[in-house]
Length: 109
Image 1 (tube, one colour):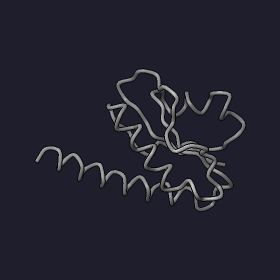
Image 2 (cartoon, helix red, strand yellow):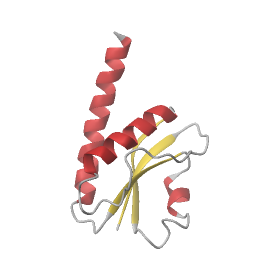
Image 3 (spheres, helix red, strand yellow):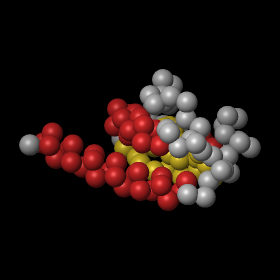
Image 4 (cartoon, one colour):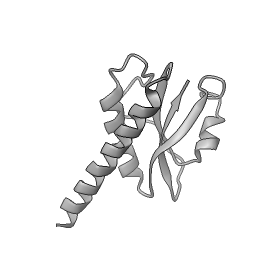
């Protein structure tokens, strides 16, 4: 029963995250979905994003890195065929910094 409740909660969270991404990307020139163990401000300031994108917003957060990785992969799978999507792979192979709170974010221009 616990697993079913966790699954149902995740599915509800995923639906909300998809809805949020859909709203933000309507007028975007391009966008990318990512994950981090840092704050969105710290991630946004890194060289691969600084000056490339104009906006960043957290979409989902959790204390569990595996849940974050799954959410990121599910969102990328949902939006990867959008011509404005800059994600090149569904599953991010990059390690995240250890953290008490992990974030899936949307970054866009």
